[in-house]
Amino acid sequence: MQLEINPTGASVWVWAHIVLGIMFIVGIFWHINLHKSGYKKRKPNSGNSRHKHTLMVIFFLLTLLSGVIATFHWIGSYHHSTLGGVHGKFGFLFIIAVILHIARNKRFYCL
Image (cartoon, rainbow, N blue to C red; front, side, top):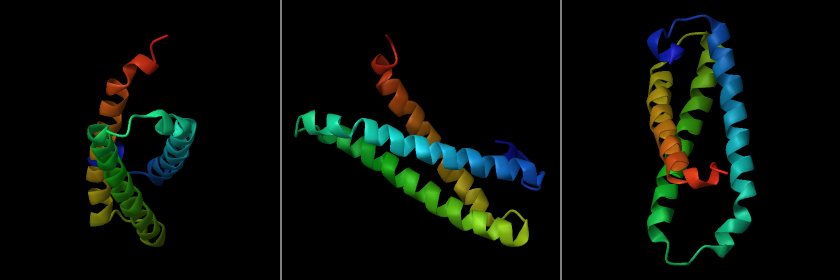
């Protein structure tokens, strides 16, 4: 949010955003790997869930692609680009999808 409010902010915020983004991506792949065997047990007619996962994958890929391009632009110029703003919007959509995913699967977090 700091980068959305103040796109010309200190570079430490941008580097922190990049590091946290990489950690988030690692966490996503770890999460998918943990549940990979669970997909085999799922009923084949769960099309609604597959549709929701497809939206999450699309938001993830758009966020990742725009983030990588914006990162290379920022490293080259140390200026916020329009694509960086687009990356922020995709990121917000992806975070909303992640929050909805967590809320939908909240029984997993309740012991």
